[in-house]
Length: 470
Image 1 (cartoon, one colour):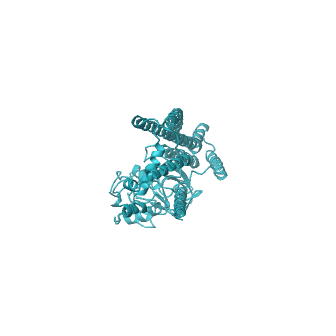
Image 2 (tube, one colour):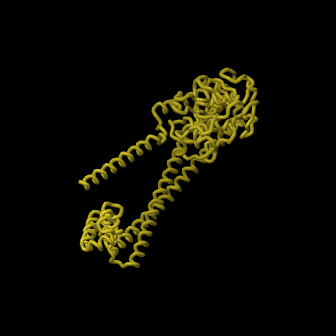
Image 3 (cartoon, one colour):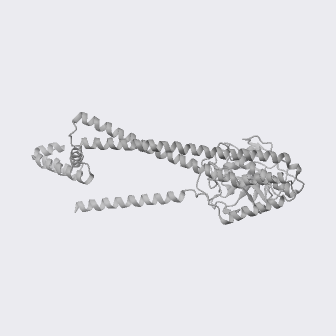
């Protein structure tokens, strides 16, 4: 009966552990950031429509100049994003290959340590010593301590140790038989009957196999790293090509005679500029796995522990509320706030610790970085993406629904952004890079759901969003 109870208890423990592991695994899966969505039929059709619209805007434009604009647009929309994806995939493959090689190498080192330990034991007690029997016998002896058997020893024989008990009861033979049986059972159940010579041979065979596997995987990891570098070089070449075409386009924009053509050139130049900002080392890590889980396309970063500073005080031309108009604002972009400014444009900026309070690759970190690049005020503790407008008002920033270059564009929780939604918990923020004639805006933005940091897109219905100005 006692044995049955022990088995029930053991089974219950195993089931409990299995349930716990399953629960933890389920929780982990639910926290993994969603992968970048594959292009849809809608995306393809939208690209075709955009390209046709661009061509129509360039009607009557000098052919060479029009081709430059179309070439730059193709780099922005197709070639560079594809190269970014290939470079990212190659980098991930290289990291996985290196991790696999390292794991195999660790197993190899462990096998070598096992061999050294066994050789040491052989030197001490000989190659024929039965480790399995000795180990189980030691467990049998220890089983007496702290059990009902130890109490019996003390009451019946006044013995204080297992050996005393065995001596006084003259049961050495019985104990020996029990140890032998236990050792044999363990050898059969756990496959521990190999003698030291066999174990040493098995370890040496394992070392040989692991060594060959480790060498192969190390070579594969080196090859993957070379491929990743080649993809990164190809991507950089496309970026350099984009910068060159953009510079040539800027120098010839005076030849564009229509407003539609000038706007088309400005839009592709702006998109190219945003692409040029998407470099490792600009504004934090380019590791796509960093940062918290969020919806595809961005979402707000998790808030810092500290509370946003309050107060700040007014002094803004145009007021500080839902009203105010961006036209006629008294600042240009870039502004006149040095990076890290604690006070600018007549109010506290809320910048107390720089951008360190924002999580890596999140939209809030990019908003902080880009505003700093543009010499515009920005705070360290603006909160979740959807909170930036209210936090800005409290600090004295001009906040309204009128887009302006350099403004922080604030998306409410779950608000539509192009063909996706802002995060339902954290919202989203982006930076306005250009306001188009049709009312749409070109934005740069961060977020772990994007393949790059920063990313860019065109958003329509600009009056539906709030903007934090200065």
